[in-house]
Length: 179
View 1 (tube, rainbow, N blue to C red):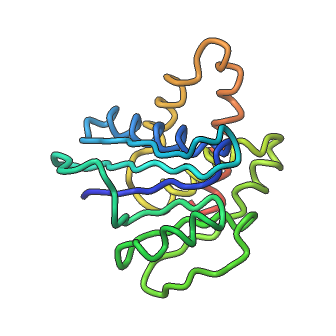
View 2: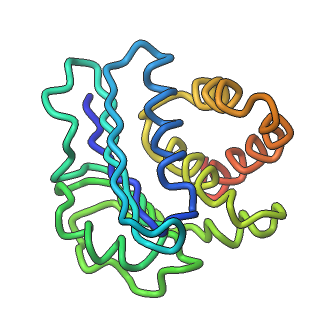
View 3: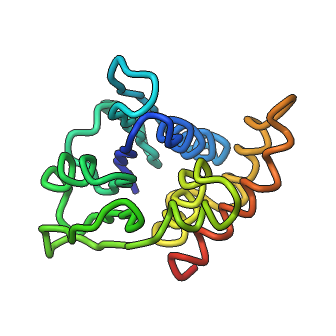
């Protein structure tokens, strides 16, 4: 199976980190992966997204124009990318920040209060890892163990203190999506 994923939100929400962890986890499983970040000139608050492909076969192009998975952390991201989605794709919606319903009825929608869950864990910046947990609960893109291994590999040195709360955020996202 090939998953063509767009992770999108505001700069500062950890969109690129989320996509990187997804690609890293896929790589750890021996899958073919690509990760391409895209962001505006703003440091924080501007729009950003990344394209991630995780596949069992060679990746023909790293560019995702019609995703079968969309993670929308804010309303502009949902409005920009929803129309591009493949039929029967999954759209993960951050209902804390997105008050509109999806316009399409031919996609699977997972609504989760990603930012609120992260806030309840003590840090709104964890919404990206909450989203990652919700995603893997709804689609078998990568295994939870691979995401944990990717987080352990990335959160080292000074960042190692963040590992435990990120693991809690991952579990909270899985629970929020019914996993």
